[in-house]
Image 1 (cartoon, one colour):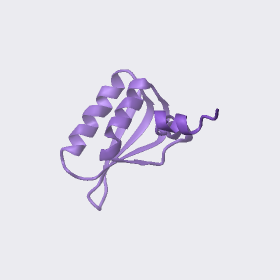
Image 2 (tube, one colour):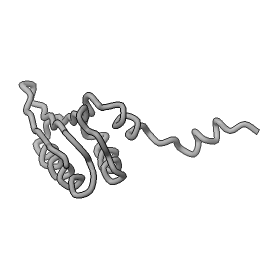
Image 3 (cartoon, one colour):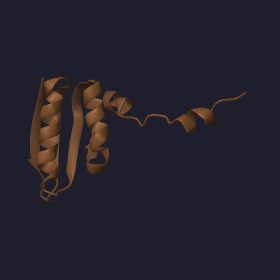
Image 4 (cartoon, one colour):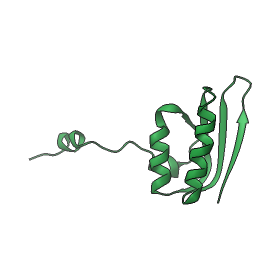
Length: 97
């Protein structure tokens, strides 16, 4: 289960606080919520402090939205999942022969 709490800050930005698990049908719910917020052209922030689980689709969604929002107070769990993936050139540069 995922609970979404939308807060409008005095500076005009929108914060969506997430509580629970980002997975399954809740990924679509989060996508819809973010899209509605982004349509307002106001800065969007996601507070992931109380997120306990993110499935593959949730990670893909957050990565696809990465350039359009700011992640606040991420749990260590979420931060680890959302780390940038290494590129092929990164792997090549660390290979020693």
